[in-house]
Amino acid sequence: RLRHFVRTNLAIGTSPDDNEWVYQILRHEMQDPTPAAQTIIREVMSPRVRYLCQVIGELTGRAPEDEHVRRCAMSVQAQCYFVQNMVRMKGRLRAAGFAEHATMSGDDLSALAEHIVRFSLAGIAMPVEGRSSLPVLE
Image 1 (cartoon, one colour):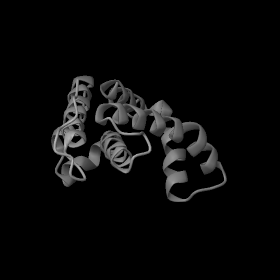
Image 2 (cartoon, helix red, strand yellow):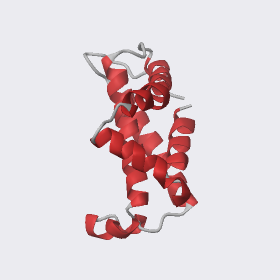
Image 3 (cartoon, one colour):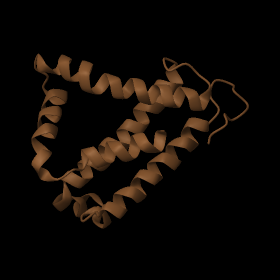
Image 4 (cartoon, helix red, strand yellow):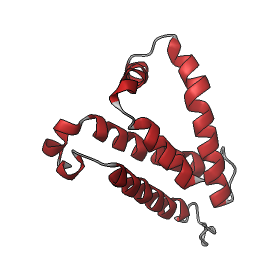
């Protein structure tokens, strides 16, 4: 389910330019909120975050509201958001040290999605707050 979340998130967030207006609105509302921001948060962002926290909670054996779970969800989201922005900044990637991602294909996105999943599973599995055993990750 984590893999599905990441792949879907990247696929939607890196779709063709005909949907760019959606991301322009989201970026604007994140940077300079209008009254529409509350609706976007409530109807678009919150359900995704709840789902991701539920998935991570199940992986860790913790409640979706647990601080560790919520921080892990934020980390997964941040990685996806970074890749989405890299795709939209194609021409500027060389200067940032990501030249190999300037012309990403579907296979490249799949590989990045898999990296995000594996990297995130390793972080999610790290013991926290004195926990000595790793959760079972499948």
